[in-house]
Length: 125
Image (cartoon, rainbow, N blue to C red; front, side, top):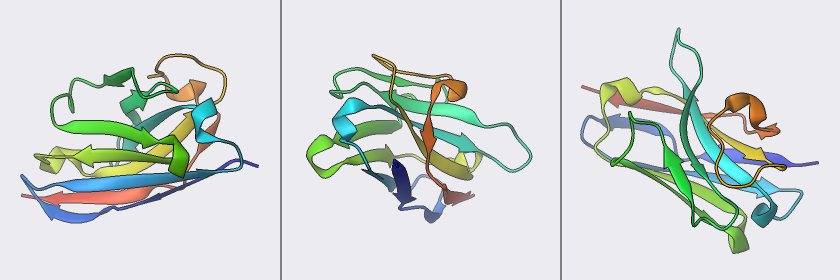
């Protein structure tokens, strides 16, 4: 059974930074494409960032490009999302997800096979 557990969320002022972590257990992380997605109150879930198996390929939504960085440490089975220059519109529940079949990066939430429980990020103005 594959499990993903996120941590690192919290309350931060606009312009600040947070780093989210996602620990994957059950299978080696190196076998997965991983991604971060988010869902703001009253809105649909949206793609944020994705990383290929090796981490050499990454892809970001336009709304976070240049501010967020996805990275992974396969030896630690951990995926990170470094979030800088946070804005109030970044407020959302952030989810880590894994795709066991894809290659490259994945921006379609329906392609992901496994999901974490989410971690809440609140950015105050």
